[in-house]
Length: 295
Image (tube, rainbow, N blue to C red; front, side):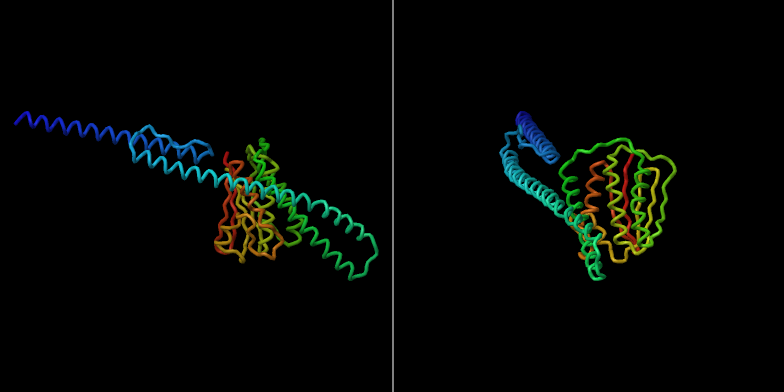
């Protein structure tokens, strides 16, 4: 009786040992699958899932995941190729438009020197206005295609508050024309960051330009010593949904506005590229755009 009991105990012990070993190998295979997936998602590689286990179910799981990884890799390459073609097309179109627009502006300047009737003057003013809008839109398309296609930047130690001041000064005429007296708060302390100064200026200019476009007559800028800048303005035409879409490419709140919907998209692209964050919030009829460049 004791012998039989020991045999049963031995069999149970061997069974537990085998099951423990099988469980260990399955957990090891699961970790191998997880590690490969993390590496694959972090950077596009040709690596597929290989596991050390001989378990049929785990190998079948790995084979099924490899099929989907190959499909995902093909779709990603097709997307990147199409996105690159689109950016190249935008760049080429923008570049091609610049030449005739420059010629048109030249002829308009010559016409300004000629004698004109009141009607001709009015028509000429309208043509000049539309031409300037077209130049602005073309430039915006060109800047976006270049910014999204060329990841290299030229970072250097800059005074962030000085760049913000220069950007605000460049819009002095536009604010005066709209009778907007901005409420500006910038600390006296030098706030230094390692950024591309041209990119930082483009970010602030696009945000300020967007604020003036949709402002109901006011504009506020508050900068803090931790590198946070809050731009705000009343904008009754917006709401929480439209504010959330302001960074989408080609999205415009009003199709009648003179814009491509790329200004804030470019600002987000450049901000993220330099390690910063940019968000838009809407509360009680007021739009807040917050930019942060941590030390």
